[in-house]
Image: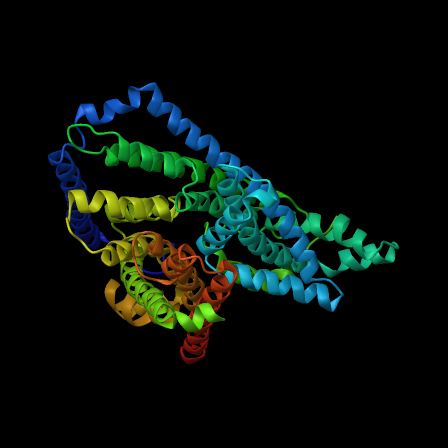
Length: 314
Length: 215
């Protein structure tokens, strides 16, 4: 009667056994946590002085600055990557061979190369040609990070959008052409809006990836949250020790809170989309998986296309 | 062109470094991921909660932060003097294990309920059902997402290079610090990654056709 494939609703004997396992498992998990806490405590990482650092205005300011910079990079990169995503998706579906090949090549190249390497190469390029590009100081890091995030996530968003465009019922496109719309009009006023709507949860999940990837700025010494945290922990000495554990716990909590808030948005939109009776199937609020998954989305959407077309469209 | 030919040993070392760190953390991620997936589908609440917490925490943490923890916290507190390779493997493996866990879990959910019911009605225990009936069938639907997870892992392994491991990112950094044209280095590094990712997707496609089950 249970909903799981793996086990039935337990009988009396199984219930006792499960309770024993629960206790043993609970103790094991608890033991693990206690061990870690005790070890950290022994090293003085839970001493009040260690945590007192957050009472200093300077520490709080630099954490706040880090959050602001991270959000700034994320905001610019998110907008640019969505714009690039639309352009590349339309390019991939273009009737012109040259445009199609260029878009495909661009997407494949930047999806295959690690984002870190893209960002690093851009950074070196920007540093080398700094004067020609009119960049100064921190700007090189900012633009390297933003453009790196944009080309990578734009490529992934393009694949997601393409899957969405392919999942729009064929009648929509045919009706639009029958009304005498041009190719561009059909794409921009009929197909892309519906694709965005269907794929919104996946698009937002990819934005979570974008947000997480801003931390790669650490490697090119750009002053985002992670870099600030590392500087903080590395420069402050409390009881002859660096307060890495408190700083990382606080910083990690900030990151997790930001990402969970975005994921919650994706889930909320997915649930809202399920309720609407437009006949467009809204994608699952997928996990913020890494990029190559856009391929799965493609398969997923093309499989689901037929049942979408049987739905009511209005 | 000259960058590649003149520094072939470095490129080879970087390539092998990327391969070994990827393979090692893939193995760790696979084992951890399957164990955690087992926790998440088990009838034991504490383990289920542990699995959920593991996946939620790791999936929403930037990998770079995990590297920071692995390199600055773990050696200080638990295991002093661990080599950077092992630390990087730990960070990458734990991070990837959360994705593997979710893939395995959704794979288990694709097995029709009747299969497990039939197994149980034959008197099989939980572990027998899991091992003999459910997992072999789940494997097939897990393979495509697994291939993309491992491709992502290959790309994520670049971060290990920033933390004093010898691999392709490290090599590109080294050569560009020496003043070689970054454009050429980028081209060759990109090619190396393309070779690895194509190999992985090819391997998994082969596996997929081999492990096909009729449903």
